[in-house]
Every structure is written in C-alpha cells, then in structure tokens.
Figure 1: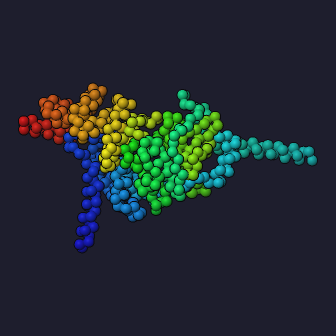
Figure 2 (figure 1 turned 120 degrees about the horizontal axis):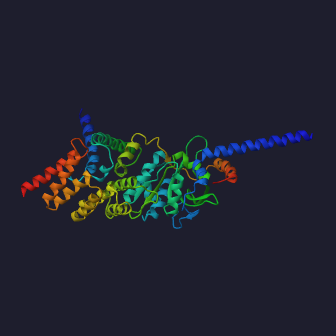
Figure 3 (figure 1 turned 45 degrees about the horizontal axis):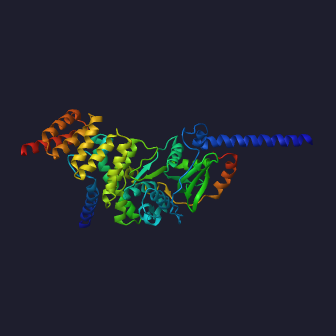
Length: 118
Length: 336
C-alpha cells in the first residue's frame, strides 16, 4: 500500500517538476507563442496532454538507458508539438545512423547517372 | 539468315527503346523535383555554388547525426565536436539519432534550428539555402531492399551544369552525388531538411511565422542554459523584427525578453511600434498596459487595457488574461 502512494507521489512530483519551467514568469504578460496558437479551451486541454507526453517521453528515454538528468534536458529543449510527435513513437521514428552508400544503389544509379543526372 | 539478324536488331532496338522509355518515365516520377528543375530553374539562383569554410567531421560508427550537427553548428559559430554532441543527440538503443533531437540540440547553444518547408519546392529551397551560405542537413534513406537505412548528410554545394551536389557525408569530406540520386534518397524522408542559424542571421527561405516559432522554441530552451546563450534570444528576435518589421510575434517576443530583463522602457518602445502597425492586437495592448503600469503610469495603462477589454469580447482567447491585468492595474491605482 505504502509503495503505491510512493509511486503516485513520485509521479505527481515528476509532472510538477516538468510543468514548472513552462509556466510564464509574469502573470500580466501574454507569451509571444500565443500570437499564433489556438483557442484557450483547446490550449488548456493540449497543455495537460503535453505535460503527460513530456513525462512519458522522459520515462521512455530513461528506459532506453539515457540518464534521468540528460533525458529531462533533452525533452526540455523540445517544443510542445515535437514532444507530442515523439511521445510513444521513440521506437518507430527514423533514426539516422548509416554511413556511406549501399553498393546496389551505386550500381543502379551509375547507369542512371550516365543517362542523365539532373 | 539476314532476316533473322534484322529481326534481332529490330528486337534489340525495340527493347532498348522500351527500357529507355521506362527508365525516363520512371525517373520522372521517382525524382519529380529534379525533373521540375529542368524547366523551372529559379530566377537569380547561381548555377554553381559551394560553401568554402565548412568543417568536416568524419563519422564514426552510427554517429552521422552528431557529425552532421557538429558540421553545421560550427558554421553557426559554436565551438563543438560530434563527441560533445553525441550525448544530447544519439540514442544508443535505436543505434541512431532522431530528427527531433537534431532540431532540439542547437537550441541549447543559443542557435536557431529551422526546418525547411517540405513541399514540391523543397529541392529549390535546399539550393537557395546553400547558395546563401547555409549548409543544409538532409535525411536520406539509403536502403534498397525495402528496409530503411536512414542517414544524415550535409549539403555544402552544387554544380548544376555538372549535375552534382557536394556533401559532407559519412567518411567523405566532399561526396559528389547526382541531383537524381540525392532526390531519390532524400524523397523518402519527405524532403526533411534543416539549417542551424546564428541568432543574427535568417535563413534565405524562411517565412516569418515559422521562423519566429523557431525562435520561440530556442527561447524556451535557452534560459535553462547559462549566459550568454539566453542573451542570444534577444538578438534572434531583433534580427527577425528587422527582417519582418510587421511580425507581431517577433515584436511581442522581443518585448517580453526586455520585460524579463527589467528593461521596461525598451519593452514599451517595441510594443508601441507594434501597436502603431497593429492597433487591434489584444496581446500588444495587454502587454503594453502591464509594462506602462509597471512604469507607474496607471491611468495610461487603464486606457490601454480598456481598449484590450473591448476587443477581447466575452469568450475570446485572452479574456481571462486581460481581466487579470485590468484587476492588477485597478489595485495599484487604489493603493496609490
């Protein structure tokens, strides 16, 4: 029982710590992002979704062996829409890695290149 | 006997003709933008261009993401290396680097990451950026067997009469790639391409809305990192406002930076200019009222916020924010 509470408390703290930096510093000034964003009702809903997505993405990065601090910093430098794109898809989105060119492409395109190359 | 030879030759010719037709027809749909460039070469774009001073970091195993990013970030004035960037970009378990991490990382250094518009003119935009001196990271799919093999490379030059693009790619400091081949491999990432800009410069193909949004993204990330990175946010908004004087988002962004720094008079100046251009902007009126009130001129602030209240309506997006500002100003007036 105690562990469930602990877990819940941890989750709340994680979400709270993520939310903190995203609140505007001054109550009176409206943020520049608002100049292009959607209506407030939608914004409210998407804010909550976004916080959850941030938490989920941080967790997922950690489960992939990124240390907690680095995972948090990575997600912190992403925009809301980037986080929403990434959440739940870390395993499927393209990950650039390969070097050089595969021989077969070279062969096919060699012919093509001499036919025309632009 | 001669008839057999003739038939063979005729058959051969027909086959060659069919193959050529197929090849050309296939090519047109396989590399549509390369085809379009043949008839629609952009006016004023040089036929040859190559950025001279772009660093080269030969990629070690799987690390094309950090290598490509270091290449463009050094050009944007950041002293860095692929090894330094790898912990922020590379995902060991995926054995690669995600596009979003590629975009997010430069923001930590006070640089603006900008995703080029990916439409039927993507190739033209790539060339325009290179001609303007901005190396472009492209995401290619080098897979041939149906399985994707994603790869980041940096386009640093092109020679259209020769039909070649020049890239920092993998272990090649200057890989020559035909236009057709770049497009064929690049098309599969939906023409994904990005540039990294120092805060003083604007990409040649950028439009105001999406570029100012890229600065907002940097503004959110940069304050987490030590100065001077966060000071660069101001410079970036200034550059954007200079390039697009009518941009409301850039003006509001710049004014908010000044406000955060306690430079209220500067914030007021920027907001007044913005208000002169757009007298019906609720955000500008609200933020100006707040700033003017902070400067102690509450009567003036109240007049401004009343204009905002009238424009905000009863169920608009900024009703609550405007109400709060008005309340604050009234409280201050009563306290005085």
